[in-house]
Length: 364
Ligand code: KG4
Ligand code: ZN
Image (cartoon, rainbow, N blue to C red; front, side, top):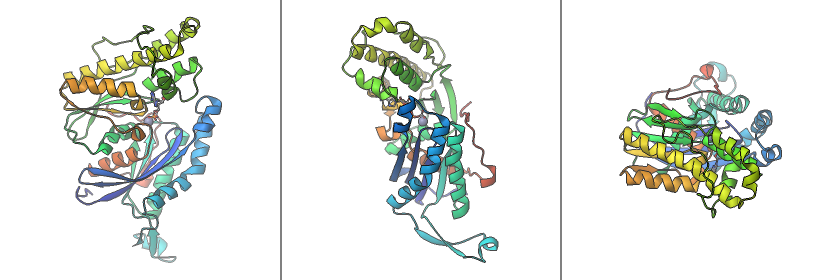
């Protein structure tokens, strides 16, 4: 059932695909989005001990924190125990109670892939169970579609076609979106993702997990031209990326690099990654004559990338949108928006058809 855009809808977003449990309540009306609450249970201290995410540990932590996080998000949004409704499943419930008190929520969206299987299961199963118990429609949402949707949280005009550069710990993709909302993948990384390139090179330099922000901070006042790191596939005619060579280069030259000022090494690594991302995105934007370019995903929090891509795209006369930092890294508000957009397009996930897919690809 398609609901008119002018009817306000409140969406519960659930995100547990990786290392943070995140739950948000977002209100959508006339194409504008208001985040009513966004609660996180961070696992960062736990994963710092192991220098990375151990899937089983992450999933167990999600299982412990997910319901308290959901309750806090619903409370903070002022929608917990929001309304009383008559159960449609009278046959089952009539004997106990016909009226159920449920949160004032119209839709539940949970990430069902891509991500770590057991972590995804916790969030998706929670979403499906709450959907069943509260008799509220449910949408299994793609995590990458969530990152793409995060740009709408800025509530700015975004004329189509839109080119989204999705850069996260697991993904580097250029996605083209037409006015019907269909996504087409123009190119992707052939090996490491941009976030992985940051994280792995940062680890080689002895920086703490997560490496991306740490490397960026270290390089903030460094000379980005100090070390001429490789910029793989910079001039290839396609829109694919490759970052594994950069990690190999850092590893190969580690001894010499350790003798240089570390802030220069960090700045040079950052600039090698950013140069490739900016050049390929600008070229794809021109080729496909897009009106808007968005920069989304965890690596979109990188200040050098934000400013250099903004400049390149605005110089082409196109609209450039990147979410505020809190919506770049994994969050549940973006899942709520993606779920709402899917709902608007007529999609719904029946509780018995939910499929969690760690390798769920979109646009291919
Ligand atoms: O989207 P995200 O939060 O999680 C995934 O879906 O992967 O992205 C996390 C990635 C990590 O690799 C992290 O190091 C990177 O984003 N990241 C950054 C910055 N902030 C987060 N990379 C470079 N500079 C940053 N400021
Ligand atoms: Zn992500």
